[in-house]
Amino acid sequence: MKNNYYEEKVKILKALSNPVRLEIIDFLSNGEKCVCEIVENLQYEQPHISKSLIKLKEAGLIKDRKEGLNVYYSLKICCLKDFFSCLNKILENSSK
Amino acid sequence: MKNNYYEEKVKILKALSNPVRLEIIDFLSNGEKCVCEIVENLQYEQPHISKSLIKLKEAGLIKDRKEGLNVYYSLKICCLKDFFSCLNKILENSSK
DNA sequence: AATATATATGCCAAAATAAGCATATAGTAA
DNA sequence: TTACTATATGCTTATTTTGGCATATATATT
Image 1 (tube, rainbow over the protein chains, first blue to last red):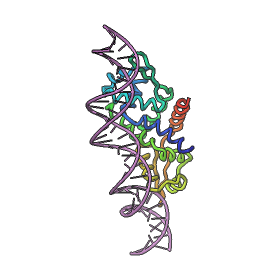
Image 2 (tube, protein in one colour):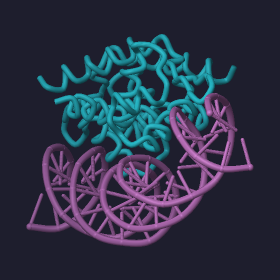
Image 3 (cartoon, rainbow over the protein chains, first blue to last red):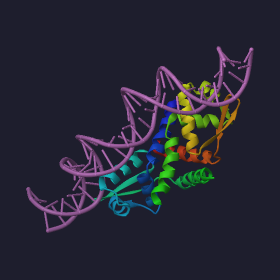
Image 4 (cartoon, protein in one colour):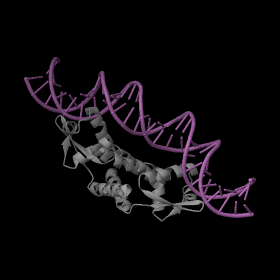
């Protein structure tokens, strides 16, 4: 259905529409990290980071892997670089 | 500032995070259209379309041009195609 | 000037999101 | 079992977003 077609995209875009979640994605672009590393690095409350990760995962943007007590998250998408370079182009254009 | 860096991207992503606005962008990918054409084609209330267009414009995604009583809107960004093809890849991956 | 048309704005209630804090769960170690 | 650690979940309040309806504005026409 046409509506579903847009709704699914909206879900991904909404997951990305948050500064903390964008920061997490940036951090994960350096490779797989456990939640504790993300919390330590980004300095937000642990539950906040956890919820952010879950939202990104539900949108299909990242994946997780358990190892003992730790959960490791990593990017699931390879095209995100181009995606964000488009965003940057938009920003450059806007400031003109 | 790092915060501003993400906030600006979030503004663009939020503008895109809505099915009606995505539909408008799709429609505009066929070329410049006036508000009346968009309203007629997408079947939403005119004030709703107007607000959607303004939000997209404020995010730097589209531009407008007045001609008599009409206002014509068109895409301002050429990389949106790649942007959405990335979204589609994410969707394909998610459904696996 | 009066009228008509295209578009934008304002206001409102409902729904969604955000973020803090407390607490639960799952795995590990003693 | 008990205690500990890493992560997830639940609850709550504040804020933002949504979409409908009424109305304002700007331009064109008579």
